[in-house]
Image (cartoon, rainbow, N blue to C red; front, side):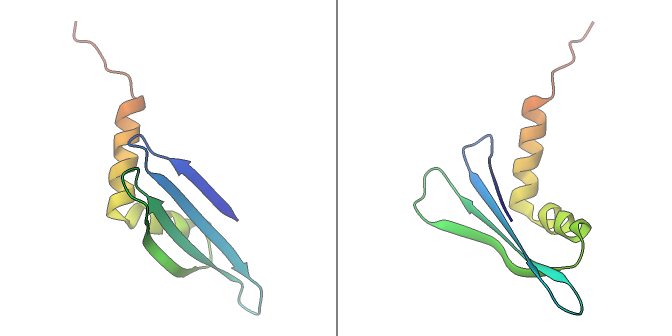
Length: 84
């Protein structure tokens, strides 16, 4: 499975999630990012073995660059509350 999204600053993130069948089913995850000013794709983490989607979430939230971009996206979509 592949998923991609574009952040507020124009960064393009791509998550690859590949299941491996066997006696103990698990998956391999890779997160890469392409910054708008760069021609090279940067790997944020690669070949991380996981067994549950919860572990994928922890990988994403544990990555400092992804976490900071996520906070920026949340603040951009949260309406300001006016003072009265």
